[in-house]
Length: 434
Ligand code: LLP
Image (cartoon, rainbow, N blue to C red; front, side, top):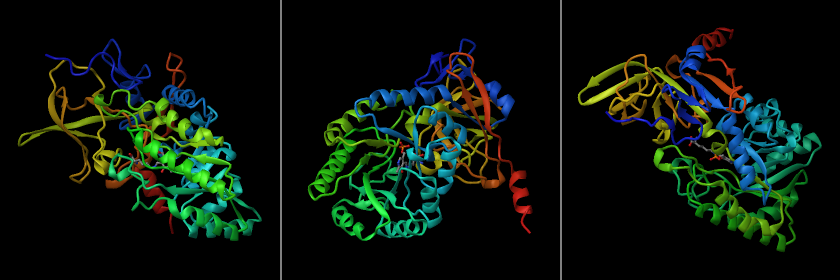
């Protein structure tokens, strides 16, 4: 008999087994939450979110950037409110995310509006709210923004998003700053665009922005990107264009697997920013999403059935790729732990969902104690890009979301921050149409 998961801390910040073998998030046992709120269930630790923001603020203290949380990672308005309570702003990519940021209490002057195809109504919503800047990604978008601002009698603050053509050395499907990606403007086109912008009286260039990809573990791509950003800023300055700030984007990776250790240290990211950007003396913005919320979240699921088929042992869960899409979409790894610790020797098992698709598999040949029907598991690192990607495929509900408030040292309250959105809700919406 060998231990399948050690008692005490497991390598993901807020998740650990207590003395009775119950899996806990920031000290709160998870099984009772599933009994109370249903399964599948997303649970987030407010304490972990706070400590990640603190880590960033400490790491970046020399530069003191405006941290704009990338709402796309987890858009629940209660999560946003928790993040914003630390003085953090928001990076939004749609009118919907903008409304969510405002509803979550983010100050408009701390909101950056990114996105490659913002529509006139979305630009108008940003201007009406009085946000800090629009990160613009094409000449066509500049013209559209100019037209909307003219109609509203305003001048829109603009950051040009530069595509630095740098390989982020992360999953190809989440790389954004290479030539061939749809994102940003070609580096060499920027000086001419800046001149051309002077023909548009209702947009004002205030900044440059970059974002080269997500889940980066290596610092070299950040170093290269920040160096290019600094070079371009100096070049523009030498031709008479002074910027007011620089937006470094997000992308800092986090651990998903035990072999990832603690993941990259934000201190190293800050060092790259200090080396290249601090000499310019401009205020900066950083846009982390995953780093803030990723390891704060878990998704609980039940084993509905087990089955042996040929040489596979399947654990068939009540959660599917519609609830947690990252493995199906990116072949991403999520660590999975039983909610109740077991000393039974682990065996390879294939964890799959109920969806009628062959891609609805979370893990193949995963070593876990043999789980039985009715037992439960938690998917770790499910705070970022999981609930936001969930959908109703196969007539399924969206799982409920729970936020553990408090400091994780007791006094924690489990707050239902979104009930499940059921199939009945969807049917009612359809039937309400004439
Ligand atoms: N800023 C911009 C302009 C972005 O496009 C993104 C993420 C971020 C900031 C935040 O990046 P983060 O710090 O979270 O890496 N769904 C994928 C990730 C997509 C990232 C999209 N952009 C996944 O599940 O891995």
